[in-house]
Structures are given as structure tokens and as C-alpha cells.
Image (cartoon, rainbow, N blue to C red; front, side, top):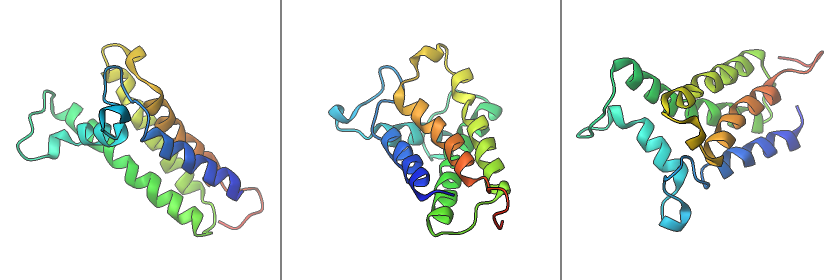
Amino acid sequence: MQRGALYLVGLVYAVAWFVQVIKDGDTLADGVLPGWQALRMSLTPIWPGEEFGGGALRGTLCVSSGLTNLVFVAAFARLARGRPASSRWSWVLFAAAALNTFWIIDMSDPEDMRAGYWLWLASFALLGLVARPRPGAPQ
């Protein structure tokens, strides 16, 4: 695993939190961290007192998608500490990326997705690539 590639993926993930996620969504100029707004929205089904306008399946997918951020952070931290790459982590990150495509389907118009979403989604797949063990490397 190359450290430069790992940190570049971390930068992509971090930038995603600072740029607009959805059309008409908040921006930094509005005084809001767009990635935080998106995460908060995805976890709406579990916030007490929040109204959620979707069924159980949609709620489960929303919350699961929000929780994939924990997977990203755990995998990134593991690799940044110099732990060996693992095909298991790689596949978990690819699965998280696949789950996160739920938002494309959930949106009435996928063209409403902005750079923040695409960078965030790409960061999971890219980290999955970085997390893949190189041939002959210990796992």
C-alpha cells in the first residue's frame, strides 16, 4: 500500500464533507458543513423527535448508509497506522460504496447530486482499492 494514495483518498473524503452534496442543499457559505447536514439527514430515522417520511426499508438503508462513515474511518485509521492491507476490508469498503449508491436511486432526480456526494461515494471505492493487498504482501 502506498501512503500517498491513502492520504489522497483521505483528502477526497475530507473535501466531500465541505462541498455541496445535493442541489439546493446548504453550503459552507450558508454557515453549514454540507457533509454533516447529509449525515444528519441520513440518520433522521433514529433521532428522537424527528419526522421521517419513509418506510422501514428506506429508513434502514438511510441509517446504514450514514453508518458506513464509521467503516471508512475505521479502515482509514487501520491503514494509516501501518496495519497490513486486507482483502476483507477491501470488500467491506466496496460493499459500503454499493450501499451508498442507494441515494442515487432514492433521489427523484439523480442529477440533483452534487460534488460532495460523488466525492464521498468515490472515496469508499478508492479506499477499497488502497486496502487491497498487493500480491505477495502479508495480509
